[in-house]
Image (tube, rainbow, N blue to C red; front, side):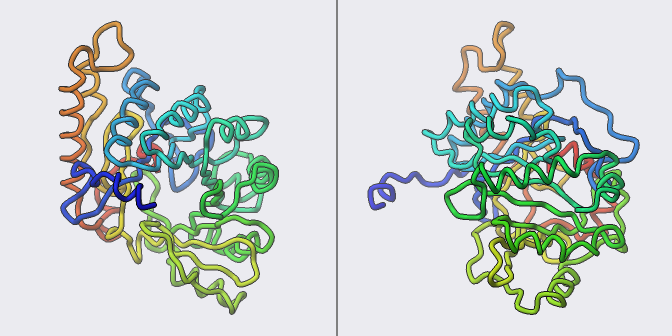
Length: 364
C-alpha cells in the first residue's frame, strides 16, 4: 500500500472542475437504438436516429476511453439506447479490458436485459464486465408492456435470476455488482415499491428507486413524480426496521438503506428533491461523440469532430502523424467542458421548461 501511495500520480487537472470535483467515472453511450420504448426515456413517436456516419465508431470509442483513463478515469459504463443491440458490444467490453494496466478498474453496463439471454451475458462477464444495472420498473406483465410499449418481462427476470445465481453477481465490494433501477412514477408503479423491496429478502442485489426526471419528450410533470420522502414512508409502513446503512459509498448517486436480515439493499436516487451534485464524479459521452459534463446541462462539445480532424483517409481513427497535437487539443476540449460544469443543476420545474435531449439520446 505504501508503494502504491508513493507511485500515485496527482489527479488530472483536466478532469477536476472549479469546485474541486474529480471526475473518474465515464459513461459512454454506444447506440441510439433501443428494443423498448419506455415512457420516461423515449417520446411515444420515437426519435430521429442519426446517420451511422455521425456516430462514434468502435475505434473512436476506444480512442476516447484511452484518453480518459490516461487522465485518471477508473470506471467506464456503457449505456445507450440499449447497448446490447450493438453488434460488437462483447468485443467492445473485451477491448476496454485492455485498459486495465493503465488504471481502469471497473467496466459496467446499463441495460434493460431483454436481449441478455442465452450466452450473451456470460460472454460479457468472460470479457471483463464487472457491473450490471438492469432497468426494470414493474413486476407486473401487463404494466411492463404499458410502460415499455413492448413485451419482455419474463426475459428480464430470467436474467436477474441467472446473474445472481450462476454468474455470481451481488452487492459485495470487489465482486460483480448487480443493481435494479426502478423509475417510480405516481399512479403508475408506486404501488409496487414494497414488492421490489421484497426482492432483497432473498437476493443479493441493490434495488434503486429513482425519482422521475424531466427530459425532452417524456411529458414530465410534478404530479407524476413520487419523491424520496414518499418512497421512504411507503417502505417504513411495511418494514418498520428499514434503516440507512452506516457506511455510504463515496461519490455514489444513491442513498443506501436495508431491511435488517435481508440479503440485498435499497438505494434512492433523489436527483429532483435532494440532489447530489456536490459529489458528482461523472462525465458522459453521447453516441454522436459529444461530452456532457452534466446530465441536465445543455452544454456539449464534440470530441468526435476533433478526432476526425486528425484522421487520414486510410485510418479508422486519428491522429495521422500528429498524435501529440490531437491529444493536446482533446484534453483542452475535455478540460474546458469540465471547467464549465455548474455547481448544481436547476430545480425540476426549470429543467422541465428548458431544452435537453431525450434520455435515449444522452445515454442515461
